[in-house]
Image (cartoon, rainbow, N blue to C red; front, side, top):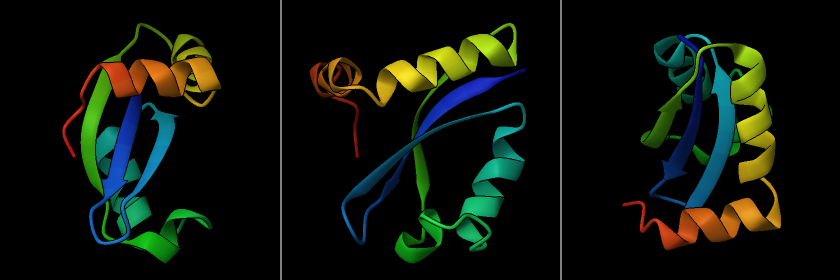
Length: 81
C-alpha cells in the first residue's frame, strides 16, 4: 500500500516528508545514504504515516504536507518527535 510519511532526525532536529509504495525499503534507503538530502542527517525515524489506496493520492498529500498549510497541520497534530 502507498504511504505518505514524515521522518525525523533526532540528532539534527530535521524533518522530511515523502511518499512511497514500500515504507520499509524507503526508510532503509534514507538510512543507507541513498537519498541526496537525507544522507546528511542520518539516522531517520518514522514519526507519522498515512496509508492510501494509490500512489497518486499519496503524492498529492505529500505535496500538501510540504506546503505552508501542511506544515501548520503537522504542528497542530502534535506529532511526537
